[in-house]
Image (cartoon, rainbow, N blue to C red; front, top):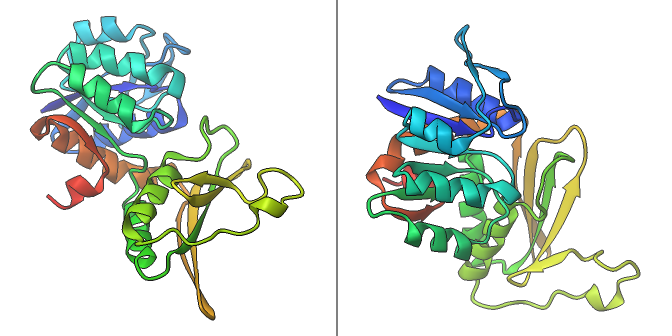
Amino acid sequence: MIDVLVSGAAGRMGREVVAAVTAADGMRVVAVVDTGHPGVDIPDGADGSLACSGDLAAAISATPPHVMVDFTHPDAVEANLRTALAAGVDCVVGTTGLPESLLAEIAAEAPEGTALFFAPNFAIGAVLMMRFAAEAARFMPHAEIIELHHDRKADAPSGTAMRTASLVAEARAEVPPAPGAETEIAPGARGALVEDVAVHSVRLPGLVAHQEVLLGGQGQTLSIRHDSIDRTSFMPGVVLAVRSVGSLSGLVIGLEKLMER
């Protein structure tokens, strides 16, 4: 049995994680933590509930869990990871906004045998979208990314867009010209450059998580799009990561690493 602590459990993603882990075979939620909502009862999806702790270190000490799943905020996740890893707890992280260099530093300082698994997106379709975009960029290097998320998302561009831009940049043999920035009437109209790939971020109520990669070539365009219309789309990937992280060590990035095992 894999004992799981969910950090950020009072949030929309955190609540889904609690229910998904409770429903999965071979794992259970043993603690829920949310510093902004101590004492709040979180439904477990099986006619039960767990009371939120506001103190991560105390919750780890009292339980203790095998795995911490963190869906919190970029301002909080670094401290959460250091606390959990120092206690020998493997971490599954969906909170975006930290650079990979900092994640690598945190993992390097953790006790030997612990694992820090990070995925910018836990939806299987999003992983495939990124893979297909990288493959397409080998042949159609002119690419731009439009990512759309709910208006409460804490980072822009999204972690998925950042990862996609990195994969596109790695796949294509050259950086094609991206005209237009020099004639912008409104600064930023051509988007932000991430590894020389233009990324456009949309934040609106009613959205969940959506991304389209547009590629252009002579007389043609190609669109590769993924839409998460419900947060349950991320849960199979989270459960896979919880189930797998105990066999990993150090920093591992990307759900595709687990899908290919």
